[in-house]
Amino acid sequence: MKQVFRLLILTALLLNLIIPTRGHSVLAQKSFSCGDVSEISQLECEALVMFYNSTNGSEWTTNTNWLVTNTPSNWHGVVIDTGHVLSLNLPNNGMTGTLPPQLANLTNLASFFIQYNQVSGSIPSVIGNLTRLEYVWLYNNQFTGSIPAEL
Image (cartoon, rainbow, N blue to C red; front, side, top):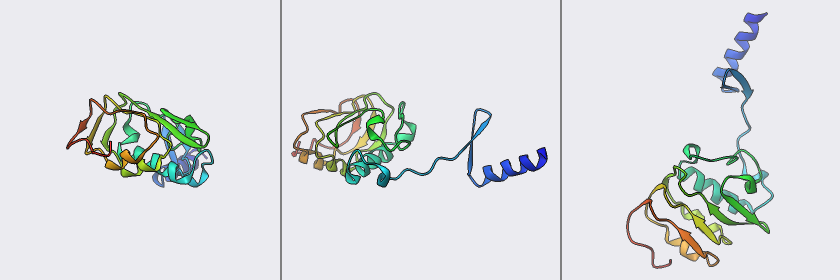
């Protein structure tokens, strides 16, 4: 009986149906979908997902609940009010990669704090279209090029 059980576990591991963690096995989580999020629009959710993916979110120092729960207000560094993302506060978080232009879809973003990371590339000019953006802290990253005139 133990051999059959072990064979089933091995088969499930090989098929990525089970993820081993600290000597225990847990069922693999369902993949994340913005269609399951109701706190913010799908467009804003997709902007957050693109931001996470383009800045290597799986390797951030702290990425608690990102793409795990369907409540972005519980994602580390995200502040939501009245159905919109108001703030991204992720300083000194081991971020790498580039900023995606989809950040422009966070139309109610008022503060964007990503200082002390290793984000590179150019600063997307579309960030200048965020008319409610009051605070932008991008220093101590690896940006190239000039600051867009839109900012």
